[in-house]
Length: 367
Image 1 (cartoon, one colour):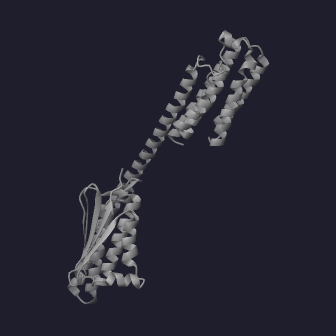
Image 2 (cartoon, helix red, strand yellow; image 1 turned 120 degrees about the vertical axis):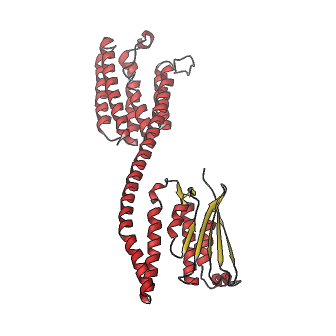
Image 3 (tube, helix red, strand yellow; image 1 turned 180 degrees about the vertical axis):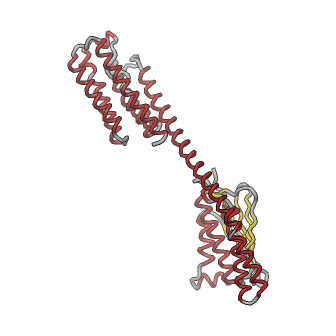
């Protein structure tokens, strides 16, 4: 359980030490008024300490932990006798009562720790003279118990988050090292072979020229993939859209993005990248495999704009509406639908013989 396991071991030590303190209280007080009952309560506390120390923590076990502790706490008047409170005797569960509070704090956070502390504090205050809800009853122990549950819960939650971030950082570093190792191998072998195939194919001509052209496209795409960062460099909440868009680069597609990251929430980034991919597919399908395309991306702190431009024949006026009426919804769904789903807009500018420009605008929803 990592760092969380250290918390549970510390709580187990606390429970055992508190149990030892309860034994000292029973012995030093002469057994209280009913020593047999006192030792029975000590036995219950010992058995339950062993159970919660060995068992795997879960909500049901910790709820029963509060019930058992509250029962032992409420048995104190019977064990001690009616004069115990007036003489200032401590109940057997004086410190043992803190075990469930600490456990709930580690398991469920500060709110769970505070709630369990309130429940046990009410029982303690009732024993100390709060039967008539008098504000003059001592509340120091209750306040300390609530503070302990809240603080331990908060610290435990922060520690878990820090451990998760550290684990992600270690995994990301390992992935980067592995990527650099693979990149060196690819650069020394695959990229050089593809470049050779492209050069020789163009020299030979004919069908070999087509193979050379394809090899050149794959070389450009692979080179860009090696250059761009790995996907798991992004946090769980945001994605660098620029890094994703640069993977579309090829011999016929030029991608221009800022040197700095272009972060978007993961769900927005996924739709933007898919819409750009759909727009480039349309370029290849309708303009030919040799048509050039350019992708530009930028943001102004309020919105992100991604533009896909091509040098194809353009779209005749009304053609998009005709395609939608015929049930061909590539632009309507794959581009407009995706961007509209994340609160953005799409503007298409085209004229016969002048190419097409698709501008995607998405509001930045980063907190």
